[in-house]
Structure formats: C-alpha cells, structure tokens
Image (cartoon, rainbow, N blue to C red; front, side, top):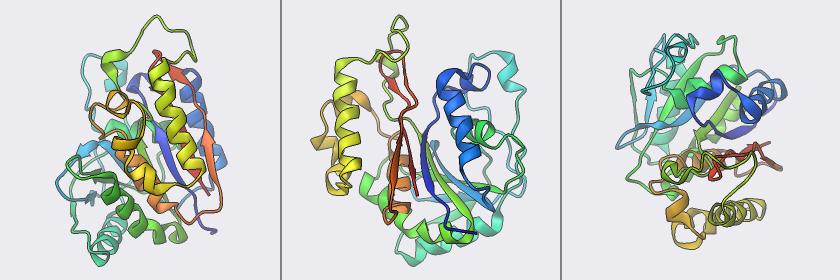
Length: 259
C-alpha cells in the first residue's frame, strides 16, 4: 500500500446526512478518490480533553451528541470496528515525541461518524478517534500531526474534522447558496493563501494575523483539527484545496487533501 494522504474535512451539521446538498455530495466523493485505508484515525472538534486521548474501544458507540434534530438522525448509526492496536501505536508515537497522551474508551461523535458515513458508508474500516485540546494552541496540534505522520505509511488515513469557519451566531438563513459575507471571505482567502504558500508559521499564528479570526472562530475547537491534518501532511508534495461551498453566508466548507 502506498503512503496515504491526510485530510481536513469541514463536517457541518449532522443534517448533511439526510439532506446532503453540495457539501455532503462532495464529502461522499472523497471516499471514491482515496485508496481504501487499513484503518482511520480521525481528530474531531467534538471530543475535548486536556491531553490527547485516542479511543481504544473495540466496538465504538455511535454518539448522537446533538439535540433538537429530526428523529431520523438519532436512528442512524456507524458500526465501524474499533482499532485499539492503532490507538496504542498512536499514543506511543505521541509520547515518543514528548506529547503526553493516553487511550480512553470512547465512541465516535458526530464530528467523526458523520463525514465517515458519507465517505465510507459500509463502516467496515477499523476506526479510532483522537481528541483535541481547546486550551492548547495550533502549534500543539501541528506537533500532534507531525508525530502521527508515520502512520500514513502503515495504511492509516489521518483525518482532521472541523469547520473552516464556525460562527453559528452570524449565520444568515436568507443567504443564497455560495454567498459569503465579506468578513468571512477575507478570513477564508487569507487562510487559503497561507496554506498554498505553505506558510505554516503564519497559519500557526492565525489568531493574531488572519483578518477577522475571532469572528470566524469565536472559539477555535473547529479549526484545531486543520492543524493536525497539516502537521501529518506537512511533508507532502501536493496540498489540494477542496472548495465544498458556503452555507448561511458564513459557514465555509473548504476542505484539504494533502497527498
């Protein structure tokens, strides 16, 4: 098996599973482009811990960590097998890099199973979830990705799952498909330019340097998985921008494939 890519995917609302629209269809198409991995390690914006934790569950529970949605969503499941050996291997790589970490019995929250159900609907790939640390900075998460990068040569697909912009308070339900607020476009364009330039130094300081960073991410837990993906894919030859659209005028679905 060749070296697998690493991926950042904007996962959006769980409603994407029953009303995919353009973003959901685009996420689903990724599963057809990527060589089927032996296992998946996915960092989700919805599992928050003080130090990195990797799920060692043998049969990860499908966690419905959302409220007020149609009953149909709560009946969905993603019964992928767990990957406890991968969890132990990942924790070992992190600890060897000086990043204190451990394993925990945790399922798959919607930041993980929602995009994976679109990409790999058969749910037959061993999967483990990685937590993020909301009190730690992008540099930490980039280091996490760097430490985990050897897994790509072992048949593991490393995924960061979050959202390119995530200000739910400023969503405009009247905005047409593809319309984007000026402040959000400025942020998106700045981040895209820095990624294309591989200017990781500026990206890691995005809170200070990017225009409208605080407005695009009032809290940055949905942006931190990007840095895991960038770290794991930092040595790749190609960084491919995946423009999956904008909804609500402010919710950008930009994703990246590093291969």
